[in-house]
Image (cartoon, rainbow over all chains, first blue to last red; front, side):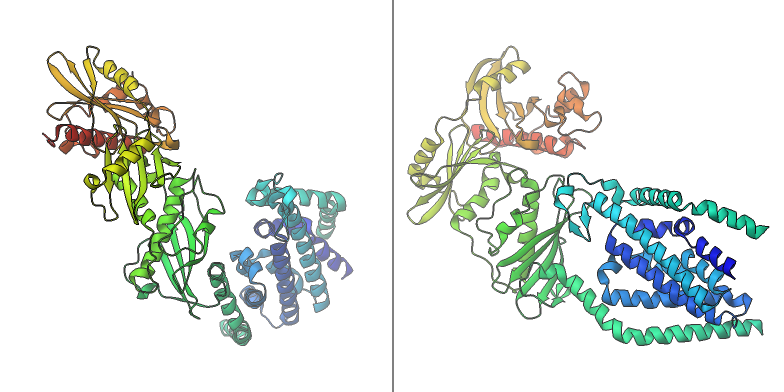
Length: 206
Length: 424
């Protein structure tokens, strides 16, 4: 159990997760408010979906798991989207269609299918929290770099002395992927998690 | 059995989430609706101080021009907010997005340019010059350096206010006499304008002169002058001819000789184009003789007229200076025979020859030695006033070639004023 738990936590680290969530990071990290909004939406929908799926997974037949899990994730994402539209309309405007596409996001679905489906509520909650929190942190770090250096602003407030030095390309799609790549490289270098993960996978195979 | 179970589970999940969302919608629905209404009203509120809620009344109005997108009525009766668009020759992909707030008394209480794709745009403070004005827009000038964009902007405001006036929703503003007369200038003295925009320097008021304008191309002057309590428009052309019109546009020159004298004195000695015009005549006819200045009484782009002879033939040359891009003046010499047909057309300083306006290949129009340039000028040979048409326009260089066409039309008008016989 300990080994399983560790491997799930490791596989949920940003170095793996980032690739799956790259589109969301690129689309939602041009502004720190949008990044926090997307991060919170991912974390909450992942957490709630994991709790429900881990509680019900024994009752759901194998052949019905995928459609049922998708329905559950879509339901939670829709509820979160409604709440955000009501209470954070500005963030919803910034996120646009990307908030709705969370319902079919591989980030959440994989977490539910691989973790919640095989483990109890505690591990599912732990994994969802770690994955969602890392996702949010990475989003915010990318947004911080892109908004400050690309837009010359912070939290939507213009920083006057940066206006002449801002790098507009960072605010666009190219800048999104560039910053994400740099952040991924730094995380991998600092944690060595890729290496650790590969070793872990090999041990499991053996 | 498996299928039924699957459907059953799915139905339960759908029912649970459907019910949850149905219930949640009672809480979030009104908030989302209010948010959406607030977002839509946000830009309207920016131009309507104190405005809160609006009703779209566009469909109830008649005669709504294409430039007016929506007309909103402020539900508390504060006035109207009009969303409209405008385009100029500097417009890129999207037209100007203008929102105008008009209070219940018919005065502009707010105006904002929300978006534009103009390559050359007026200053950010320009729209504020409209605030407090009624539909007469008295005192609102075009923006120097961005006359075409500001003209389009002003035109959109006039059309927007015109909708409310024609539907009896606000009272029409009363224009001042000076304003009415100034608006006649582009029609009555085309030499002072380019593209319908006044292209003139202000002349200091003195004596009976209330306002004065000196054409940038040297084609004359326009003065708004007072006669007792009345105001009159006095036009002076480059040849020193004078014309006086009243507020209704009637020619009252015969009754106002004194004002004409004062206007001519104020105009002073005008630019003498004899030398440059003669050079262009001699370039076309090296044997031209007896080049004699001729007076003309039209008010256009012609700045000099002369008659000359070659052998037994007598011709009339009309030297015009129409303005094109960046207020650059072209030099055009149109030679017309006694029958009123063009025998020679020469154009110098064409805008498309300076790289200001050209498409690939078109720039050769500015090269006097290029065949394409010669072919273009030869198109004018034999044309009479009645046969001058858009066939002389150049696709891709429409501003410059339109200016050449207008100058040619002015030459015909000047020829008719000399011969008093109209098209032959």
